[in-house]
Structure formats: structure tokens, C-alpha cells
Length: 127
Image (tube, rainbow, N blue to C red):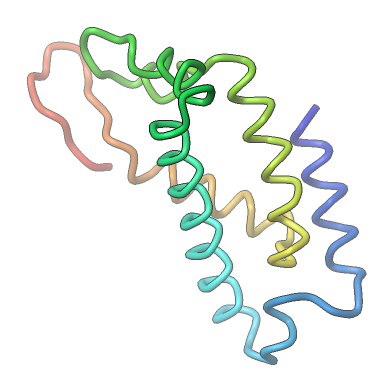
């Protein structure tokens, strides 16, 4: 559901005349790099808020219930946290004037740098 809404919000934001990063007049690739860094900064602040704000921390605690971190840990979230996070993302996408492909690129980069552990390994590696 939220993937479709993000696509709609991304299309709408591209059609608007005044957009935050567009006002700087930089090339698409520089704008994309800055947008991804700002989007990631937002996601970091959101994650910190989930640790610091008690009501959010109660939902986020589910993410930390694994006894041993593995590839499933990154997907373990409380439904309320996912919904709230997705709603807040809907505000960030048009603010930064992100294209859908830029959001997808961010997600691909995020998946590429997440720590992963394969069965039988004792350490983590960055892929």
C-alpha cells in the first residue's frame, strides 16, 4: 500500500514548480546524491527517535528481540512502527522532490550496506 503511495507522492512532487533541491539548480546526479544523503539523514534521525522517545521505543523494541543478529533482523518491525515510518516518509519524498527511481536507488544502497550473516558464520560482512 505505502509503495503505491510513495510512487504517487513522487510523481506529484516532480510536477510541482517549487521544490527544495530543484531550487539549487544543480545537475540531476548531484541532486540525487544530496537527496539520498538527506533522506538517509532523515532515516537516521527517525531511528534515533525510536530509541529515545518512550512510546516509539516500545514499538521499536521488537526489532531488537533477536538473540542473534542475522538477515531477518532487518525485517523484524512492529506494524505500528512500519505504518508511522511510512507515513512520515510520504512527507519527505515530496519535500526533497524525489523521483521514484531515487527512492528505489536509496533502498538498493541500503540493502547493499546492511550487515548480513550467513548460516554457520560467526562474524558479519558488508556486501
